[in-house]
Image 1 (cartoon, rainbow, N blue to C red):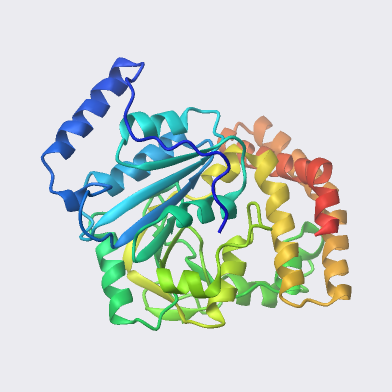
Image 2: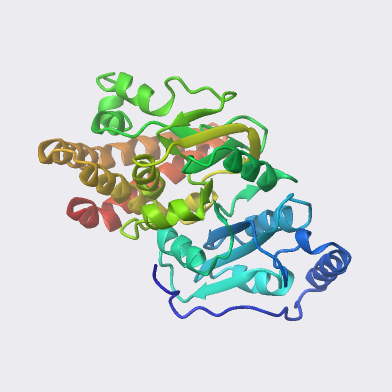
Length: 364
């Protein structure tokens, strides 16, 4: 696995500039000073059960909430936390250094991508288990302990994924089937109204989704994945050809060829979902499209089917842009600002795909 790109390891806290941040950091340090070692991020002695690996880019406030949930309440196991910051411009790395001095912080000068950041964290991890966690999550007390309990009771398992809930408590789609060209074509505006690929899409996205049953699955959502260290070593690290999007599909498929992947809904975390995607749509949306193409190619999709998918997606982008732009205007006139904002975001995504991602999309 690659070494970090000129990381800086933050080992001590610096003085916060704002009084409220100084007060918050002081409260946190005082609280941790009286906690047993197993509640803190790093311990001086003893083995580490779980290494929490978090890739971050420009999500300071969400990252703070995530770290607080991990470090300010018992998790039931010995935990370390590693944050890899991909050149954030919002002060996220400085926040971690200042407010969470027990976290191992790696600073990249540029955005090297989700997969590379995960590999950097894994290369520094000391735990028996690696827990790859999105920065837009909140982890309830005892979550890691319950995940480890399940993994140790089922040593044949390759990945354990919890149930994901949104901010309102609704269950998110926490696992899926492996995607096909038909399923992805149904996402386009050109074909969705025809219903030609609807059945394939439903099989991929929703068919047989049972939120309450522990079961083997094909793909676990990359927001929260517990992986035994020996599985990660045996199957290989995250595929760094994927910058942002599709990497959890490829990762699941590769490990799933050798070990079962288990959705375990008795353990739950809150996942706000797509926070980084929405904040950084110029980067995320073109890369998501490229990631799907890379997965289809690597999974053995024929050249004809891959060409068809690329051609339809390319023709669909200006249509989607026009539809969402018109929808935005109607919603603005109708004084529905929240819905208008969603339409504008979708229009911007189509625009960035056309202007920044099309060449890479066809080369993938």
